[in-house]
Amino acid sequence: MRLSMAFWAPLFVFVASISAVLAQYVQESELIINGTLPMSHTDANYICATIDWWPNDKCNYNHCPWGSSSALNLDLTHPILTKAVQALEHLRIRVGGSLQDQVVYNVDDFSGLCHPFEILKDGLFGFSKGCLRMDRWDELNQFFVNTGAIVTFGLNALHGRHQINGKVWVGNWNSSNACDFIKYTVSKGYHIHSWEFGNELSGKGIGAMVHVEQYASDLIELRGIIDNLYQGVSQKPLLVAPGGFFDREWFAKLLKVSGSKVVDVMTLHLYNLGPGIDPNLVAKILDPRFLSRASVTFNDLQQTIKANGPWASSWIGESGGAYNSGGLHVSDTFVNSFWYLDQLAMAAKYHTEVYCRQTLIGGNYGLLNKTTFLPNPDYYSALLWHRLIGTGVLSVERRSVGPHLRTYAHCSKGKTGITLLLINLSNQTKFKLTVHNILNMDLHTTKEKEVSFIHRLKSSFSWMGSKSTQNELSREEYNLTPQGDDLKSKTMLLNGVPLEITQTGDIPQLKPAVVDVNSPTSIAPLTIKFIQFPNFDAPGCK
Image 1: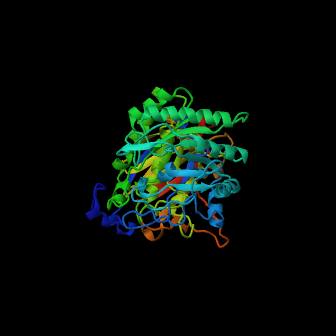
Image 2 (image 1 turned 90 degrees about the vertical axis):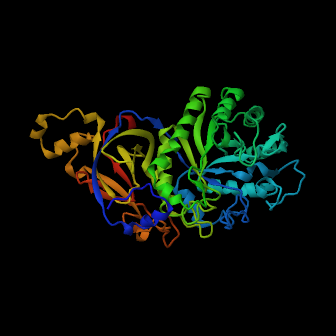
Image 3 (image 1 turned 90 degrees about the horizontal axis):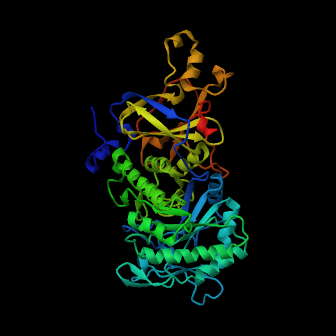
């Protein structure tokens, strides 16, 4: 019985659980890894997560999933939160989101009332302005120091402007409040890696938009403020912009008008799964052709930067899969990791240096549960990526591999060799893989029959070192499955063991299965697997 993955809601009940699979097919495939030269590189701290501004009365579809997860009220002393961020070792945290252009800073000459966001019918996104007190800013920075976080802070880029019609805001940016805020930050010795200017004001905008010429002029002013306030500092913060959805003409013009080396990083927002209420979210996540559409946007951004501002790097500044707080009972479950890991790997191929997940906590798409702070499955996916995947992205040639098997290769992190990421979106096909090194694809001759098995094995994979023994030739596998074979489970299994916080509140160890390298490499239907080959000869990774 053969079923196509191109089905939608009425038929999707069939794959709601892996246990529903009635037949399994085995497809033998080959992967040829080119480790001679990386095709692109990521930053060493590629994984990033956001802390948003949404208050607890932010609701979508009659559901209010934010709780106390805002930058203004998040419990920064919660031990699980601290340990979860520390485990990611210098996690990048972006403080920002839809309400950042309504944040005022209670510093120096600020004379208004300092109150949190309140529901306001005619306000941007239905909320009033909100105020960041400096004692709260102090608390946030203490949290960043305690956890080793690398911070990007999104500034209010609408201050001083006024709305004329629809979403269009005009007038010069009033930089005084932001300038005082940055000055306070510098005086306290707080380390901010990068300042971001506004949120989703590019192109047609989301809640508001600013014409690119005006935005570029104000960006130049902000560049001057940063350069002035950080005089004598060896590593000045980067300037990040525009933090919005891709509009080729707007992005290109921003780089041209602002000029050389004003913008250090171009940030893109992407929610390619559509609205969180879409009943077809799971079907989209498991549709390889749908997932691959994002590559067009990644490529367009890369080419736009290359043509108009090659001094700038590219980041995914915000991506949560499904917008409007994510998908209830989808974005915080195992199935979302098919999308998340695929996006991380795909973006990396297009010279994306940093990928910021919406959110660290809050909404349906938080890496951590907003109430218990317990990690959701995607947290462990991010943690595995952070610990296993190096900066060098390697090309993979596929032979006899169907579209449902997603295959990615990187240099391994902190060790020799390579790491494969395999994502099997098929509900019925098991893939049995032979992995080759491109260095040896033309070395096979009839004389090979005369050499020992172990020598042929080394040649096939081009193992490093002439003194390797058969005992040393192993690989490490991290096989990810959902608890109870339920794709919507909130518990992820690693090699059959549930990933759960320990009794002492610590993040669990992520132990691989050590496998004899000459045993078959395979991946079961609807599962994810990281595989490390420590002896794989990859000159481009040295």
